[in-house]
Image 1 (cartoon, rainbow, N blue to C red):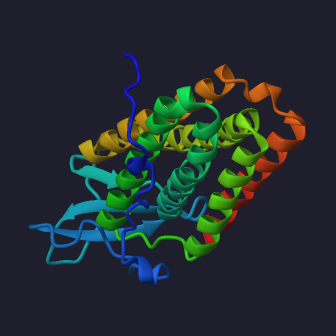
Image 2: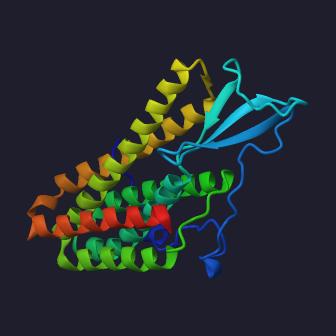
Length: 259
């Protein structure tokens, strides 16, 4: 299906933050996403090898015995820090495209539909992870202001260097983000396999999370393909530019997991 042209006004709208923009350091309290379920009480257990928080649903018992019965559903989230990283990464992506688009489109008007298409998808990803961190009470990264400035600067500077550099930026970012989502999906699928081997039935929520991550991963890799098709490899020096950006992405992921 051909890409539809978008008005530039869409690209000038700031992404919607999950809390008031004048309080970007607000931290959500970490809370149990399955509180107040009728006829159930929750047992929280941390896996010492992965620090993953699992939630084992058990029927209420006067004795207080919370040993899970395999006939009941076992539900778990991916690591809270991963949801935080995903949200921060999608914020950065929207700001990169928002900064790149005016400069790129001014010199190459035919790229307006493509830039708008990629921006709109990233804004959708950002909204998805805003909803997830709200739903599961995961605090966002405390480095929102820093990532916002760096992402805007990266988008503007690569666009100033030219169309090829802007596309090389997309190539580098989407390569790292694609790997990041692949690792998350692989980890969740391994968890599901282990649970099913133990006799647990996996909740529909986990299946929906996997579908969402796969969809977003595929759209990010689509952006990578678009970048390569539009001469990302011709950026000079390509190896240095993409290497620095990829290293920066890995560093941002590492920091956002912890702060």
